[in-house]
Image 1 (spheres, one colour):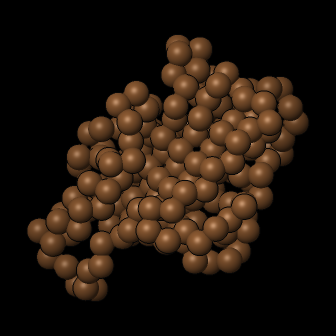
Image 2: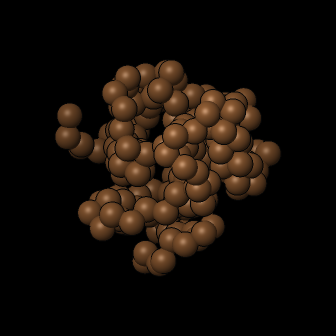
Image 3: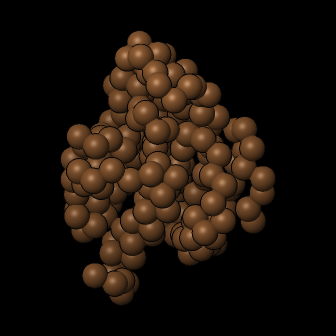
Length: 180
């Protein structure tokens, strides 16, 4: 299932039955290399395929020196932002993961996805920025900014945390057991 996630590579898992014809796309900046993260993500993608179509997209990170000026940081985020926005369709409902976003419980997150599906939204995109975060352009395009707390997490790890929470939301919305 997992292929080389080189530049703009895609992983697509087709569901055995779709929940309200929803599709999930997770866009992350940078190539995920850590085997333990790839294995964890692969496990949740496998579990999710009975609920929905899920697509994992990696866009290249912008190479930059260690010490950047504020202007250089903005430039890097804008270049990465352009790559992200190229993967988003006009009808996609976009969640940007941002430290200042809304903090939701798992139940609130599940309810939000269910409400959006009821309103006719069927394509959800979750965007995880690189080490510098997301550009203002991407944040402006997002329909909602969400946060997993005020703690700082490696952006690679957030892919695993996010896909687990998406899986958990499907379990909650179907009334299936899950660990609290």
